[in-house]
Length: 141
Image (cartoon, rainbow, N blue to C red; front, side, top):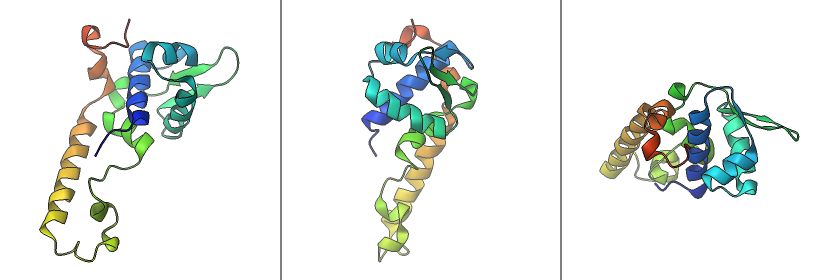
């Protein structure tokens, strides 16, 4: 598994919004500049995060993005999967019907177990924890 550029940008965006707190309106321009995200890319990411109910998008000249959940309730898993979809380490785990040997293959079970461990680990990391140390967060100024 590899985190895509979109996934990385989504993490940056939510990290920045988390540093501002739930309910704070932050302009798209500010997020794009502070987090080094191309504005067009940010718009696409914001749509996916809004569909996942992580942020709300406010349109207009005084618009921007609002974090709609407390950072402690937003996990790394939720943000990444909002962008790339559910994490699977191998196609046989995502679509076992496409593999003739997935029901009797020892490696299938290994991929499945590793996937579960990764998802559980990512689900334990929340954005409140990630914003606690501003010295190690380049997006908090």
